[in-house]
Image 1 (tube, rainbow, N blue to C red):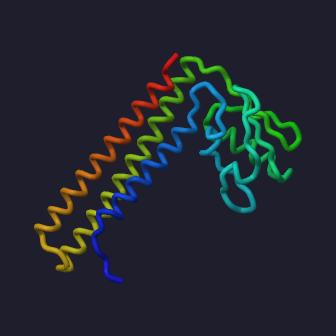
Image 2: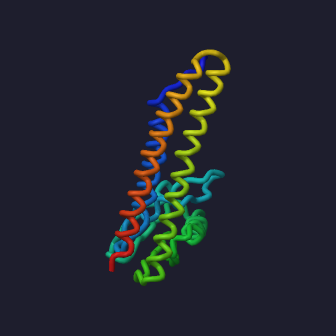
Image 3: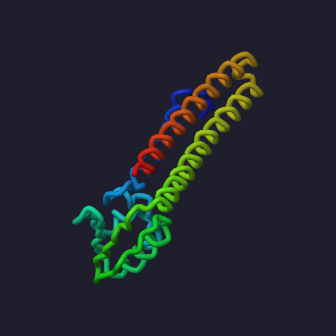
Length: 186
């Protein structure tokens, strides 16, 4: 199968990084219990890393409490460990197969931690976008080397790809700024 340059494919991949960032941001809490807070948590279950929502029911019975009803009793400790290791500042309490996760009050230090975590998520998204750009540039160089496109086309497509990258990074930065504002509101 011949390789070809597709701006739409690269755009779709960059949008995927932005979508992933938005999902991660939805998991950063701003004071109320939200089942999405546990979205980034992965549990070692049956030899695979799976999202916590695939091993139990997540609910929010109170505004400052999340519960996870684990389906398989043998996975309860693994879910507890995964939540503790996720750097979300949560300490589950086991009650049989039910994990109660009280949400601590958001003090200024915790808000700063959450803002820093949001920054890490944003940087990972920027790196993903830059990796897509690198893949596209490498493809353009290969196509030009194989004489499938001309040097002028390579430069034109490269400029388009750079503009697309800059636009996605700008979207990531604005999403980060909005999330930081939301977290830091008192």
